[in-house]
Amino acid sequence: PRDEAFKMVEAYVVSNLQESLDLTDDQFTKILPHVKRLQKDRRDLAQRRVQALVEMRRMLESGAATEARVAGLLKEVKAVDAEQPETMRKDMEAIDAVLTPVQQAKFRLLEAEVERKIRALMNELRAPNRNPGRNRRPPADEPEP
Image (tube, rainbow, N blue to C red; front, side, top):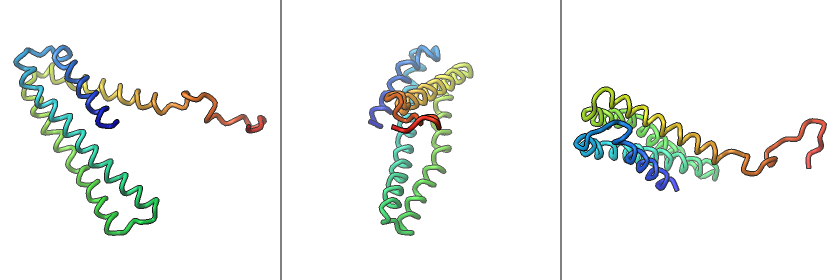
């Protein structure tokens, strides 16, 4: 599911890229590999971080955590946290090199819109309204079912 979500985001960005940024065909051809690299790097870094955190949680909850293993997993999380800004900066610089300043601004707005849509979708999926009343607490004067 996570891979599919990343692929859907990448497909959405790519399909809206040329029109949203008013790219020439030449610019689109040049920028596409850079945008795909940005998406891949984001996905890979997120997956590395989540895998380490999931393993850490599993070990801690099961009581099987050792100082050495937790330290190793923390090292991986910290490595991703340190790598991510530099990797994203390099990817964005490669994209910016193909774009005019106006197109750079449009790209950042497109990215912000995609992030907003993802957050809204995630909130919708997590919303308790799929089963109304399930998580509702009765008022103090109403007995619980």
